Image 1: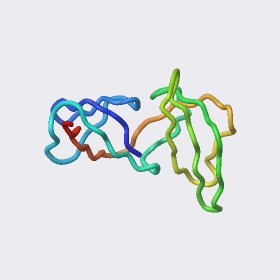
Image 2 (image 1 turned 120 degrees about the vertical axis):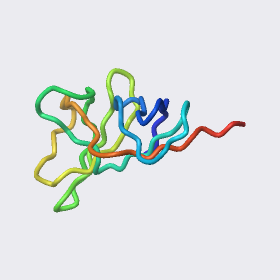
Image 3 (image 1 turned 135 degrees about the vertical axis):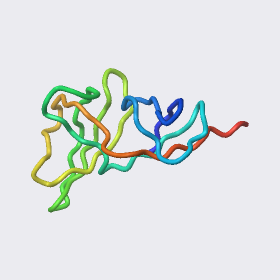
Length: 107
């Protein structure tokens, strides 16, 4: 998924917090690419608050649609099939690993 961000140094600030960008990113407005399996659903109350939407099972894993609080955006996480929260549950999110950034195009 792509989220709007602002890059300063190797840090991208976006709806999922301050994330570390791989490579030598362009500075300023950008889009960050985050893979669904990088999204961690936390049990300890730390991270970015979200609410669980639809959960879709695929046997060994599942996708969890989430809305970042208080006003979005909507994102999707891919988690192990035994680690799925119930729809409507408030959770917290973090991003595991580096993200890729793409500079905003001038129009």
